Image (cartoon, rainbow, N blue to C red):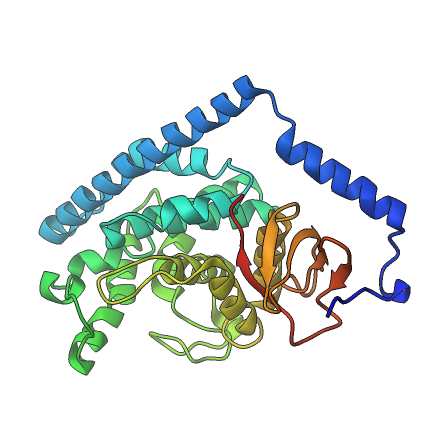
Length: 323
């Protein structure tokens, strides 16, 4: 049965809706072919640089494992430029599909979390100095894993309790590796130490309450979980985009800082305005608008109706469709 939105729930007239749809259609379909070619070439260039950065991160982890020294200048000069360039892409939805489909999870994960954290930092309007510290700290958030035995780090199955306890120590190992490097902002080391802490005190290594967790670590925690859920590993299949977003919204109050998470979810969903989706009742439609406080409860235009997902709590977006 088709659902329509009561007029009291939206201030958009039929004319305004059609104008919005025209804008969306034109924005998505009327393009200069040479411009699209340039965009595709930019994506290919960035993807190549991210592949290269992932390989370099693997080499850096090996150096750290053998020497206990983090080559900061090499990271700043060879890896951070690729991360900053990738963070210029306005739609993280594209990155979602590019970043989840690669191997070498541990090393690519560090690069991807650096990118996602940088994008989120921009959305939060951080100044350039803070953004630089966040980007570097996010890229180094898992550097402590270089001190984890390879048989645990690369184990293709579930860890034992003892192995998991050792794996969790990567936060403290990372902090020790970074805290005494003179040219690093002290918050870079705190990101490594605290990115698994949670708002409700249920994280590790210290079960800190919210007011004791650095804000940069809170940002990286969100980027870390987003990429981890989105990635395929030997023991974990990548979750579909809508599942990842739904789960993260469920964690808005409790595990993660709600203000940061709502900005993250809103901006991701807002990047989907104009895209077609499949709803849980089998209908297809186009996302028109996204609610700032309930990002998954979008306004959807189907073939002959307007659906406000805020009204029907049992109706949801099941899948983003690829035209």
